Image 1 (cartoon, chains in turn orange, blue):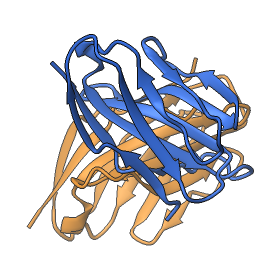
Image 2 (cartoon, rainbow over the protein chains, first blue to last red):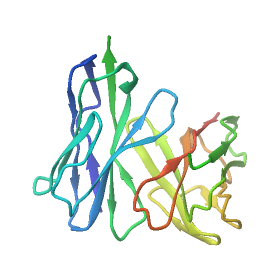
Image 3 (cartoon, rainbow over the protein chains, first blue to last red):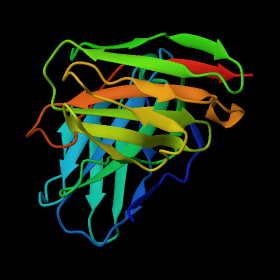
Image 4 (cartoon, chains in turn purple, cyan):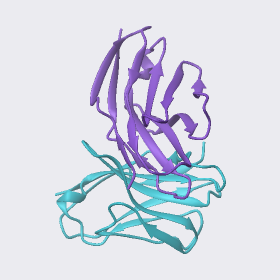
Amino acid sequence: AQTVTQSQPEMSVQEAETVTLSCTYDTSESNYYLFWYKQPPSRQMILVIRQEAYKQQNATENRFSVNFQKAAKSFSLKISDSQLGDTAMYFCAFLWGGSEKLVFGKGTKLTVNP
Amino acid sequence: DAGITQSPRYKITETGRQVTLMCHQTWSHSYMFWYRQDLGHGLRLIYYSAAADITDKGEVPDGYVVSRSKTENFPLTLESATRSQTSVYFCAARLAGVTGELFFGEGSRLTVL
């Protein structure tokens, strides 16, 4: 069974600084996808970024980028120029290409301080 | 906006009562999912559906029943609610052929006394 581990229950960062959220996963599959979802205090789940395992290039979406280390089974999220609106729970998620079941980590609560 | 509407947003019930959480999508997403979110557990899949009349169990299906007679609706029923089912429930949907990206509803907070 695939598992996703987020080892940092809580983190904080100063506004405008950079922060990295960690995620590791365990799978024996070669075809899979990785995601970071954001859940602000409004509770709405929002996709931040996705990465296909077969792509070597790290995904980037504006201030959000990932460091995908396939051999190490690591998928960290870097947030640059942190903004107050980035305050949220962040969930790492894994999807095996042959499944519909998205598996989530337990989440990291990020607080951006002014 | 995938138009996922959940109701009720908040519900308080008592142990042993039947509760149904509704989920409606305004698009024609093939796949629909029910997750529960608990502190320390993240989101865990309860049930999902690939199409009308096709459903399958997720990680934590015990105590829950789903149906999908119409593509746009995917209700989740707790036949006899227990305190351990106190949680926030999220319905989600995605298009066929678009791997992984889920569109979520706003969640339903259920408290079982």
